[in-house]
Image 1 (cartoon, rainbow, N blue to C red):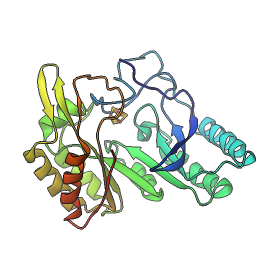
Image 2 (cartoon, rainbow, N blue to C red; image 1 turned 135 degrees about the vertical axis):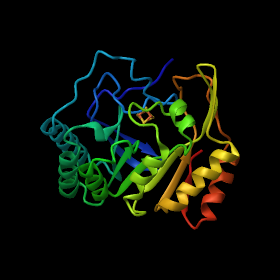
Image 3 (cartoon, protein in one colour; image 1 turned 60 degrees about the horizontal axis):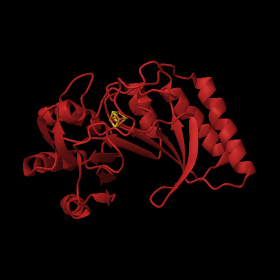
Image 4 (tube, rainbow, N blue to C red; image 1 turned 180 degrees about the horizontal axis):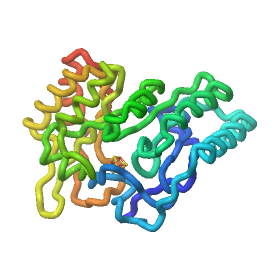
Length: 258
Ligand code: SF4
């Protein structure tokens, strides 16, 4: 298995056709993964891998790392389109997540006022009102919802807490549509069990949820790099586009990666 970890707090910038120039922020350990899910497709590997590193950095250390990076980028006249919270796990698990978002907004305004701030979250911490309030402040809050079936959530996302997609959905509805929903589609086997969130039953239930959320945008994608569960399949672009067409038919903006 060869999954990837980010070994800095502020990493990149990375250039991509979709995001432009993106500076990554990792609030999790630099040599290990910490997440409230343990998705079998996670590009960072399983939570149990690299167990020895549990160190997370303080709000002031994150602030300094980000400030130093932004100063260096500005001195080099480097462009910046987006600051993206991703990294080795779930960023909202950081105990000072809300404060770090405030700091990041201030740094963005000081150094790159036209850059956007994006947070990729797995939606497991939306029962904490401070996390919800912080996510409401950023330009792009991308909330994971891979399935509306508890059995698939258990097998695909492997949650540490509740395994109740309806509860996750109600938490996402707190955003009253001011959010982006992100969904990974894949299928394969794990521990001898079939895992597939692309069946008609899955897609129909997921579309009902999307209709209820009515997000600003839905982003769908499939596996792109090595995954810890190696039996997982990449879903074809045609299949993703056909799911995307059904989202579009609901009057919701859709972004299909692939
Ligand atoms: S939610 Fe993201 S970081 Fe966490 S296990 Fe899943 S893919 Fe990995």
